[in-house]
Image (cartoon, rainbow, N blue to C red):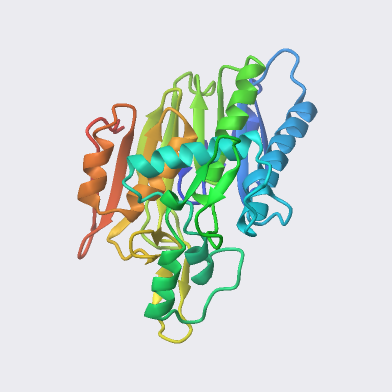
Length: 335
């Protein structure tokens, strides 16, 4: 295998690094949260890989039981079954609070209350509607809106409409990356990269190159052979990419193609020339949520919002008539 010292960020990450060949580095990989994950780290003198994997699995399990719609007994599913008196755990409260903050920062374009719409279009845990009428769209919008849910003084979640369905899928992977990052920090690791389903945080340097981690971004042009369109360095920061070019569904009656990304303002899948957005932030939770929001909102609004945050950077890939256009926020680091 040819050595290539970068990682490709996409909705699905492609690894082209021969980490097995470097005796200073080790890795753990597997499948969790409905996707693949990969962790590469500098070996320590007393490196207990078995314990690392066990502890990482424990982190996945705890978060799954908190915010996964696919775990029947998870806290979010208890909340979604009309129960306003559910005991919430640390992770649920953290994700909910961070989601509320980003909902406000993105002017409502990031909104975890879109779960019913996600389900209706066939991208969630429930069976989708074959063809959605305008009346059904309006009904779904009426049970959407983050202003309709809040945490009370007892840290219990209150829903103003009992039918609101929470879906933290657009922030969950990034949050889990951050929790594993905290774990590695607590053990004294300095040089490592954590990736879950294309959401990444990188610390220190890549020992193979003795440089900060180099992340390559996938060309969103649909083809069998994946390719790189750009790359950037990650210096103790996180990156997340959201795109509309892989996960789609076709209406069996109208033949219309739907992307999995939902516009909470219109209550339906987006119709946009934006193919993908990559966001760099200090933490992966923020990067993950903002990447989704910037995919959904108009490009000019997203560009204005992102440049108001010194700690955030974004890179858009936009479809033109016969080509694609790249748009960079003011401080994006182009290699």
